[in-house]
Amino acid sequence: MKKVTLLLLLLLFASIGFAQTTANKTYHVKYVLDSRGNAQRSEATVYITRDRITVQRNGYEKYWDVKFLGTFNLKESGESIPYDMYYLVNKKVNFTISVNKTINYNGTYYYHINFDGQGQLAL
Image (cartoon, rainbow, N blue to C red; front, side):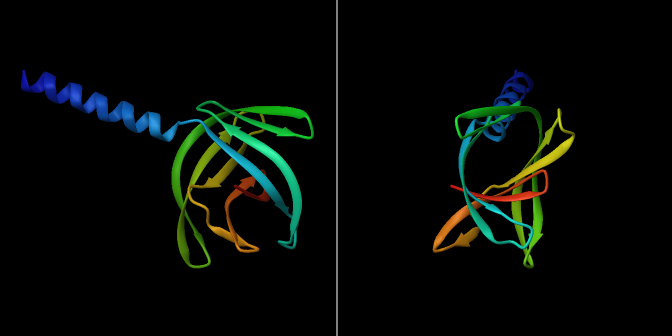
């Protein structure tokens, strides 16, 4: 009986952990970073689900099937910052987004998104 209870608890915690890492998220992109790191105003909404990323911009919608690869720490300015990493199946590229708002621009903190090599700042 103890083994069954332990197994049920383990399954419960595993399912809670899976649900937390695959929760639906919405980000509002405000700036795109150019090749010199300068922020250019941009408006888009990014929706992330367990298996898809959808981008809405200028009345158009585009989506990519994704695979969640996990949360990884990346070094930025000597700091270790956690990023969620996704693999875009259709494009065969990685998509990363900071777990926390890490970049301060004009007094506001933003999430850092890297989409196919392009940096973006989002709320």
